[in-house]
Amino acid sequence: MSLAHVLLTSLLEQPATGFELARRFDKAIGQFWQATHQQIYRELARMEAAGWIAAAPRVGSGRSRKRSYGVLPAGREELLRWAGEEAPLQALRDELMVRLRAEAIAGPLGLEREIARHMALHRDKLRAYRAIEAEDFAPGRVLSRKARVMHLILKAGIRYEESWIAWSAEALAELAALAEGGEGGVQPPRRSSR
Amino acid sequence: MSLAHVLLTSLLEQPATGFELARRFDKAIGQFWQATHQQIYRELARMEAAGWIAAAPRVGSGRSRKRSYGVLPAGREELLRWAGEEAPLQALRDELMVRLRAEAIAGPLGLEREIARHMALHRDKLRAYRAIEAEDFAPGRVLSRKARVMHLILKAGIRYEESWIAWSAEALAELAALAEGGEGGVQPPRRSSR
DNA sequence: CGTTACATGTAACCGGTTACATGATTTG
DNA sequence: CAAATCATGTAACCGGTTACATGTAACG
Image 1 (cartoon, each protein chain N blue to C red):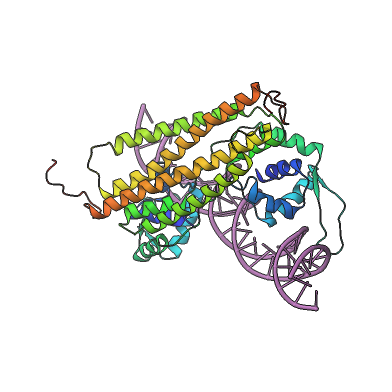
Image 2 (spheres, rainbow over the protein chains, first blue to last red):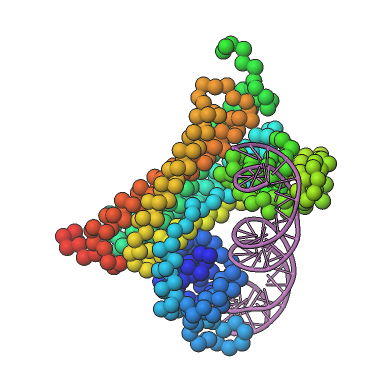
């Protein structure tokens, strides 16, 4: 159950309302964890019940007055406890690979377009990450410990995108070769070798 | 909903019981999709109700007699229809990155051990993938179209593991540098380089 | 004064996870 | 015959998703 710990970390950095937390996901850890506002409100309610966080008195009136949360000592302890736990490798799930397997078994499906489209999306992400890197972690700048660790997280995202881009190029080349050379789903005859 | 389509693909390759499908996940697409046997039985029942697959008459007696499923024409059509759909980039979720962010914000937590442990696990996976590659897709061998596409899937897994291994090495080096150099959570003073 | 952004929630659903139960078949 | 493996299922739960409802605050 990581969502609670993402929220604890975020609130520890800066107290916030549920709404602000939802937006913060986009920038901060959004590469590696996502949550909708409904999930966040539900989780905040649980965390408050558990005594990990507390809300400042509501501001405004009516149904939608703000609730700004801060982390209580018990919440901080919980975060540290959790951070020390071991976790298994995150299981990967990728629909595109499922489609590619279908392509392998149920004959040519013309997956090239979809792979090219994904490649472009990965390129966009990479470009966005590189822009953040140039802005926040420019080389030569003296960075705080916090910034340097945050940079590591960003670098993981960069490597991830790069590796998918490289794979996409390889896959497109291979599928193109398959389309022009001997295709057909079974062993190509290949006269001259053996 | 990819599980149904993973199962359709697998059954198209070779009719099987739920139990066999569960085992097949380990070898075939297990890198990129996983399912427990409970999920598989539930999904098979739905697919049968939808008229996508049909079971051969039960073999044996009592509660646990085998049901071997095969794909009906409607199932094959469904798979082709689905394979042509566009899908968004798979969202990433990685607890280790959540921990690393906690490390950035809530001070040094000694995450090095956990990162090293993950690195070793990624190395193990990479070794296993390379072994499969050497066995099934040895260079120089003439491969069928199907084998060449399957090889692409494996290569995606290989690149993925490699990129995490490279990242882990970088992260460990950076955390080590942080531990010996100026740490402390705030900007280090650094006299001479104004 | 109307639109956009801010802000919080309820309800229903769905897929994935965990625990538990049961029996058949194979093998030492 | 006992143990391990094969094989199928029920039930409860939990986190993530989607749809819907409601109201406030800021701005042109």
